[in-house]
Length: 210
Image (cartoon, rainbow, N blue to C red; front, side, top):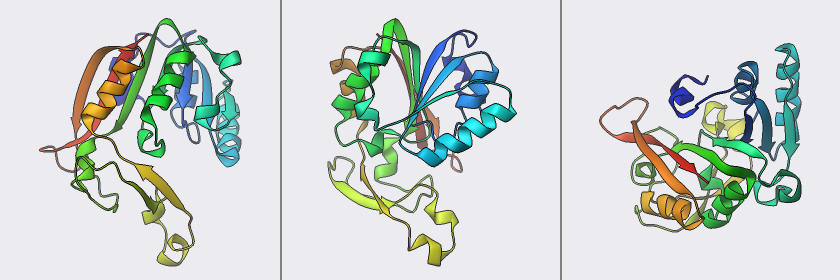
């Protein structure tokens, strides 16, 4: 579960990691097994229940904070983490990327590191990851309603009953400039091929330090 992210981690044992929008713990539990002190931040109580049950079965401790990411208790968690880590498509849920990056910066200790792996903005103009979402101008700043993640895997009758999400997709320059403007030092920017077409970009990873 962590294989493609392992080059971006210097160590695991004893490292305090904030797993942002960590969902059901599918990355947090492996990190904990490797010895990290992991706190998941996610908005779903059901995700918390699942993650803690899996962590218990794996005999590891996991801290899980159910909250809006933009309302994380920075009085408690400010300058607390060695690493903030997010993956699997997070940025498009936040309509103010500067505010999001500001929170990430506040969570880190001095010399701490952010690892942000996300869907490539190329997906704005081509559905290369087969998400069945609308395409648009690459430079669009539109907020649009789309299906929840994984809705396409359900039967049509169930799919139609699922609530919508509001998305805002960013350009590469918007993402990189936000990282810089919020005080980070950009250390690395990698682009990765789409899952089923290695000729076009599908994901990217940013590594930045405080």
